[in-house]
Image (cartoon, rainbow, N blue to C red):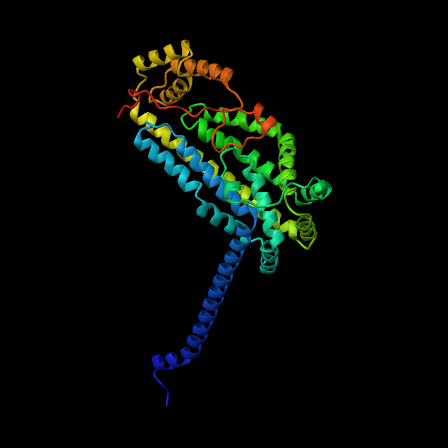
Length: 379
């Protein structure tokens, strides 16, 4: 007896339905397994990062970003202060930068390398080297508290000079720190000094060119710092590091972490600068419909008498972003910038900006702007 077409069709379709169910289950299993594997690699990558100096670099820069916030003008309008602070806090947050670093590095490192290299960095020698390299980076910033909270090492042993030089050459750490400084210093300085600037792009380009022109001297200076810090590591730990660097893919792994960190740092400072600058531009145009003649005359009087020059420059930069730009503002901005340049010293260090001794003297420095005149804020 033949079955009705619908029933026959239903019975014949069951094996296909089962096959589809099995196939879907297998795909789901593979997807879940892949997700678990990715999670495991992220965990292992995080562990490796936390054992090396790369983690300390992120923490040091989060602290440096905090110093910028601390130096914002005291009576900066609350609305603008909140937006600038958010731009810095969000983009230079340690957890956010670390996650970005993990995501960038995890895809380029296999599990075997992650596990074997984590074991070395977790050793006594690995911890000593990680602390020394973190201290090298921290030494670039006058306000860093890394060494205060991470004491260690021994008294510098000059008899290890040859061994120290071998480590410097093999590790290529000074080159990495120099590249990191070159890629972020202009952004840092612009964020500090030009967050209120109309001529920000020009200033940043000049600073970046100055950094590029001194790349060799920066690397040399950082190598001197590295020699001092590595000299405080025992000869046994230095030798162990050299042996590790000579092992399979050790330096290649470090280069992956460094390249990822370099990109994360550069992107983070760039976003913070762009968002803070955008907040200032929007605020200036919405709160300053025109340049107030009384305020401008008071500023000019200060410039003429060489009084309150940082404050004058700060106010002119805000006025330069008014809804109706005034040529007089830009003329006075040029005047005050020249006068300030005559009074700059090596002690005028901006927070978060690397100080590289002789090399830094050729780079623009800044004095954080003081509070605005009470009449500047127009809501």
